[in-house]
Image (cartoon, rainbow, N blue to C red; front, side, top):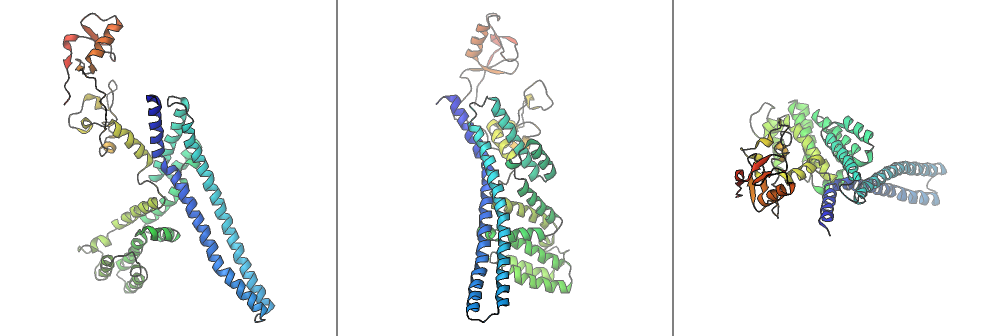
Length: 406
């Protein structure tokens, strides 16, 4: 395998590793849709089959009148028609998910059909990928309308997760408004998955409802809070005794208390904690990365460029973002410096530095043998002098200084 083909394969693998969430979410949605179908069928089966047997036995033994038998059959038919309508809705949802998966597979497959990364088709594919990353970033940042307009304009609705993030953002907004109804409804819809993964989101939401009842200091509300705690907090198998004891202790404190942990429980900052906890739980259940895909893609590139000098106190003039005449290091730039700060340094198993490095008076470093050889081939350079291949400046060989790398 040639080096060019190896480099191309490495980049293809890198793309696919970063684009795993593109296929994970439709798979997870299809699995959940199938579970919904299975639950609906099982629920109606448990009702209809026993009801049908009872009606048949009652009809044969003449313990029911014909009108009662017809009424029982009508009730069963009505339930089955309701099941049919629900199944049709779930089938349409399944078709939509499969169509979305097909479009995403075709998008990734197109990358394999590109003969070279220098091909213009790769630039087109990369632009589509960049649009996907931008839409994902806007959705996670709460700019749903802008994300929808960009996706529609670029024709990539099936390549981005508009519906999922829009629903997530709606619940987050309700929590920021200090409402738990929509978050609890989402927990109810995903109760089995939450129980399986042992997330404590529902317990925290129920605890917040309890806190808001106690906050009022109204006696009737406190009684209601105790009933609420017995129903949702004490009976919760995932809850811990420590949390329940703290909740019980709130009954004797007011919201202006300075005693911990009751001060933190009464704090309005808990709503921000709940919104962040919901986002974390939502993303984990749907196999979505916690960070925007744009940050992940940028981090991979920044890590490959990062050196210890980038975040040192002695940066070269090339890191000046106001300069237009010198190269600007992406790591040292104002826009990406903070994002790259926690990234690991680039690791090279093979040195790309010339074996005989020298530095010219203009600060540029080259291999001495290669620089003299290139200057000789040019022919317009006098003997004993060398030409900088980048700037075109001519220097005397005596001006070259040996570079030592520690």
